[in-house]
Image 1 (cartoon, rainbow, N blue to C red):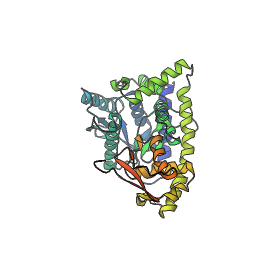
Image 2: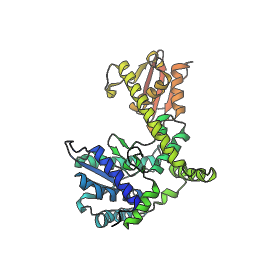
Image 3: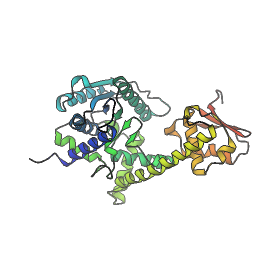
Image 4: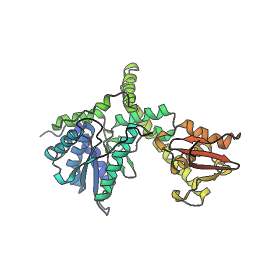
Length: 353
């Protein structure tokens, strides 16, 4: 008897490896995850792989289908995804739930970011309710390549170029495990599409994925055009490798930055780090660490990380290294940074300014 389709086998291997790394056989505690499913090819392929592999690892799976309510018929799409999980993939009816969320279409961070935040909140709410250790997402190597390009467009540093992590805090992305961990990995979008076809699953195609109003769609189209014009069919895989290398470097630099800030603050607990810092202490950091320290402190005190660009950070850094009496610097998140004498303070933006 022949084995499963190669793309089915790859998605299963990625999920099996991710679960084994998350739940070692000798680990104590609840062995449970929640999986975000939209009904698209990526998330259906993830759900199929979890349905096949999780029972073998004694890992319980709660499927969460988030209805953003952003398009007509979204409830029907959610129900179709739920039926696929139950009728075709074998999940118990009680283990598949649909959560309707409200997305602020006028949110200052934009519709994409607002929808992503609402989706994450829904996943984590369910994870907290059922005691799940991770929320599993279906991002592929193509998504990672697009994320790297978006980071380049913002002019950000190595952390932005590192893209999304395969395992960060409570988020698990099995399809982003690289070839050094999963032979044949990472999983590409074409793999999820082929896996769904081989398994007889009919994915939903989100019209928003073709709307150039969204930055990720523009990044996708740009990558496709570059591959054609430069005759570089492996461009996305190269960007994935770039993200992996940048991620290793960023992890080290972030750790060194936190150690430096902890020494200055007198505590390892970042929640206790103050909003006012000595200019001398920050100027004394190596430039590579100083710019990271500024981002860390800005986000800690209310700035929106996803919208902080290198331009914002350089403007704040000039308060430290090129001080000429300039006024406060505004950063995304209604936060401002002021220098008064030998101190830099991060605070909510003052009303009326």
